[in-house]
Image 1 (tube, one colour):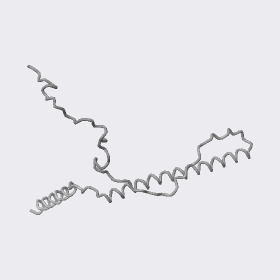
Image 2 (image 1 turned 180 degrees about the vertical axis):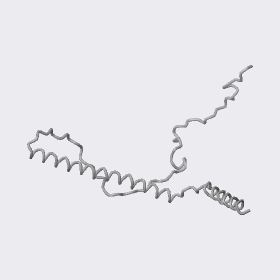
Image 3 (image 1 turned 60 degrees about the vertical axis):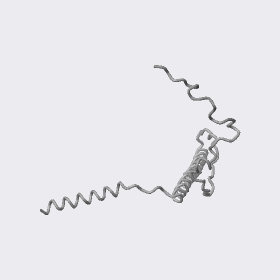
Image 4 (image 1 turned 180 degrees about the horizontal axis):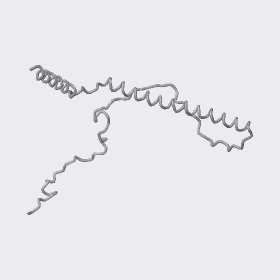
Length: 133
């Protein structure tokens, strides 16, 4: 009698856990969306800083190589001209506006575009007559 009781308890616990896992998460708030956007901007800036530091290190290694090669009287081709390393500067984030409704976003047509109403006085039957079988 003890074994079926354990099975029932285990199955019921699994069912409760399954319903908890399948529960919907609430939609993220505007504050959470703003923090996520800021984190994405900071990650992009970090990537630019890493690329800048890598560029500086490559320039330093190349300069050392050419200096060493000249000292050893090696025949070295001149370096190709590369664009200078672009410093991304300090991190600054200005939050953009979140999704606006279409009316507030200016997505509608300007008033000068529409010169007449979309419908006329012509009945639909005159525009597309019914097909005869």
